[in-house]
Each structure stands twice: as C-alpha cells, then as structure tokens.
Image 1 (tube, one colour):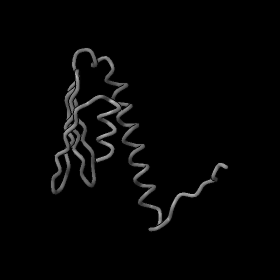
Image 2: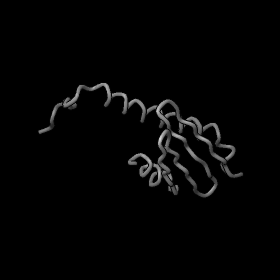
Image 3: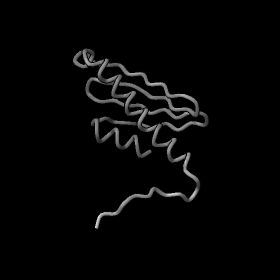
Image 4: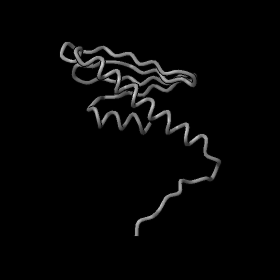
Length: 94
C-alpha cells in the first residue's frame, strides 16, 4: 500500500502489512516505538508502545496520527465522491 510505504520512508519505520478477509493489519517498529494499526471497512485501531524517551511526546504523537488519518480519509472521500471519469481541473501555468 502506498501510504504504508510513505510512512516507512517519512518516519524511518519498518512496516509489515498483513492482509485479511475482513481487516488488514499494519505492524510497525522503529527505535522507541512498536505498534500495530488495524484497518477495517468501518474502523481504524492504532496501538503503539512508546519507549522511555518518546513517552513525554505522547500527546504530540497522538495529535499527528489523528491529523494524518483525517487527511488520508478526506482524500479518499473526495475521490469516492467524484463521478466516474471526472478529473480535477485547474489552471495551467505557461
């Protein structure tokens, strides 16, 4: 999945995607963080264990995760609401 690859490169994490029939699981790890995100049709569940040095940043990390998920969902909703065959329009620079 493209977004999992983006997470790996942006956050220097090792990610493993486990695809299932009803839900997918993304396991992630890097120095100071181990976790998993379960992705299903109706929910996301993110669980992470932070190491000692990252625990003080829990609120900041949680806010950033929420922000990134909301942005990704908004993009997908925008794609889904466009009629088939429709494209973005915009002014071209000359």
